[in-house]
Amino acid sequence: MTAEPLAAPAVVTAPATAPRYGRWAGVPLVARLVGLITVLLALGLTLAGVASTTLLSRSLVQQVDDKLVTEGAQLARMAVDPFSQGDDTLPTDYYVQVTGNSSALQWRARPTVMREYGHPKVPTLTTAQAEARAGNPYTVPSTKQGSRWRVVAYPVQVDQVAIGVVYVALPLADAHDTVTSMVATLVLTGMGILLLGGGIAALAVRRTLRPLRAIETTAAAIAAGDLTQRVPAAPSSTEVGRLGAALNGMLAQIEQAFGARTASEARMRRFVADASHELRTPLATIRGYGELYRMGALTERDQLDDTMRRIEDSATRMGGLVEDLLSLARMDEGRPMVVGPVDLAVLASDSLSDLHALDPTRAPRLVPLDPAATTGPCVVAGDEARLRQVLNNLVGNAAQHTPAGTAVEIAVGVRGDHGVLEVRDHGPGIDPEHAARVFERFYRVDASRGRTSGGSGLGMAIVAAIVAAHDGSVDLYETPGGGTTVRVALPVGGPATG
Picture 1 (cartoon, rainbow, N blue to C red):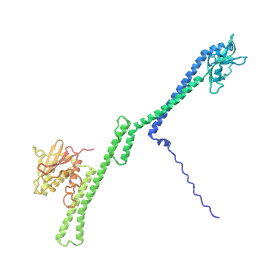
Picture 2: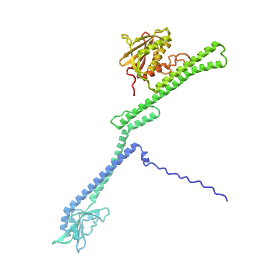
Picture 3: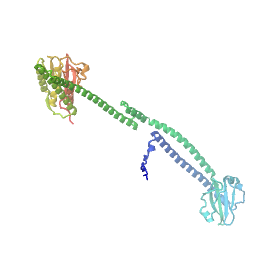
Picture 4: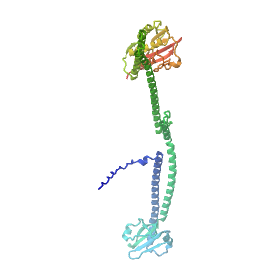
């Protein structure tokens, strides 16, 4: 006996629960608003029509009742001898019926009225009931379909003895026809108003939502990558105007953030590329001379000494570059500074001594910022070690990029609430095209990457970072008579905190 294969278990899939307002949520806003306006307009017209027809019907019925009450009582009195005269003596459209306590039913009406409206189905009342309802009209059906009558009943008395009941009736056909015509007129008028109102509402809504379509178009352009797009301005007194202003403000911040990020990424890529190149040059030199030594190519003492000197120079250059990179990294991290009183005149004097020791052929001088004044203390609040680094970098640049023996001056003084320090050289100067970029990282006037001497292009960037950390400013000017002047202005009160 072979076993039957087991059937695969049935997979029960839970029915997807549709959102409660899924269909309505998928309807465009224009269609929603137009539909809502049309529905409200239809409800208003319906309520107005119902109220109008109800009031008209009541008014017409009241007119019939008034006529029955006034003329019906007279006809009832005449009914004591009800049929002494012919039917033609009855007022138009009236129907009169008399019942007695012991007599048969008798009625009178014009033949034309009977043919057109039929007979009213008057319920038989006793004389007591007629007395209780005397003068109060009520509605009864007719023998002709679609027709109704309004009836009033009065008791008939002879010598104060009730001998029967007289019924006086008027057809409601005229009132019904008037109400029907009124309803038809209201329906046709309402349909026209709905069509016209819906069309006007659609135009008004589309015109009102035109700014939203402009916002939609702008958002699509921004999503495609065009961050310069802006929402068209609208009056600030409107919701769309306030929304557009808020979106434009947000877009401006987004564009600025993207621009800053793009610029930062570009600077970072350039920074990494330049740093890698600057580090690769001394490393390649050290590696090359190391390979020469390993291969036994350095056989003489002078060759070995020269090789060691070159390796040491390359290592020193690489160490200086690493120190500069660390200084910039500390500036970027915003590490706290040791702020205290610093005399810029003392720092300038020390830097001039260092410059003279570095190049005895120069004649560096410390001069007052204002030629009419004398050199004196210029105290600011700052980090002395970092401000000393600023002066060392500026003086070192002046010594490196000007011919030997070129005069260098450092001017110190106070202007307003800033301590100002100027390093002036009388060398060849800097072209304007380079002057605007000397504070960029790794930027060098000599753009050659194959050289093994000169700076790394970080000295002036370090100067700018330290001065910015002190809430100061650094600018480049042309020295009168030729050369370059670097001016550093530092607030006397020191950098702001908090």
